[in-house]
Amino acid sequence: MKVKQFSRAGFHRSVFAVICLAIFCGPVFSQEPASKEPALKESAPEQGLAIALEADRRDRGFGDTTVNLAMLLNLSGTEEVRREMRQLTLEVEGDGDKSIMVFDRPRDLKGTAILTFTHKVGNDDQWLYLPALKRVKRISSADKSGPFMGSEFAYEDLSSQEVEKYTYTYLRDEPVDGEPCFVVERVPVDSKSGYTRQVTWVDQSEYRLRRVDYYDRKGELLKTMTLAGYRQYLEQYWRPAKMIMKNHQNEKSTTLIFEDYRFRTGLTDSDFNRSALSRIR
Image 1 (tube, rainbow, N blue to C red):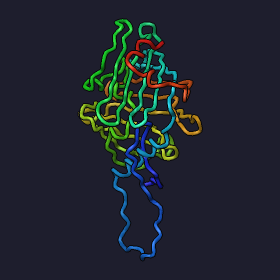
Image 2: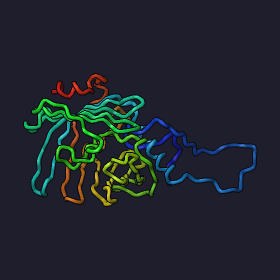
Image 3: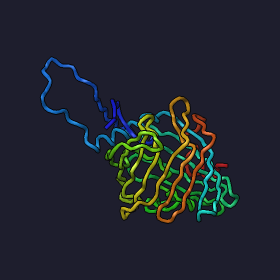
Image 4: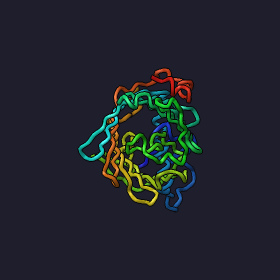
């Protein structure tokens, strides 16, 4: 296992954190003679958690972001539907992120918005605003495994992936597109999750999420998400230009294309509440 000296460790995003275990691997100097007992190695769960915590540590402190997205729905292999939207994200001290995703095109979806409060412990909160009905609808935790606006992304995929929401097991090292990666299995703590487990690939150079395999409630491979085109912002924060979610059971896919990331734009908590859903333009 190639996990090297971590002050803490972690996975994708602001999402992981705060119970920060310090894992020290450096030599200890002592007047006592060296023990002849073999050194204890980290267990696979400890290694998996360490990787998750390190990835999270590297992504803390971004404050807030905005980004424009194009959503491409491949429905039949030849038919493609395009949607355009914006996403606003606010980092929350001591809890998961808050985010709003609002549709700009096509016209019949314009103004439709989803507000997500991710929590480190317990169920996330999500609300969907439907402008045609001028109504805000709460999404129950039992419905979060359902498809988001007809895409291959589920509502729960839109939440920031907090470290505390999973248990972890390091599986192996394996490259993605020639990039050495840690392969870590994470199992949702929430029994209402649509997934029994997820297998993730995190690159060893920058701790960026490169691939996720999602397994359904029957334990069968459901879909795979790949992330590409990473770019670094503010000399610290890595964000992908593209995410592709491929459903292996229905052969459909959804691609998200990200453009014009902006950081620390001055968003505040008042920009992320139920009333803001109907005001956002």
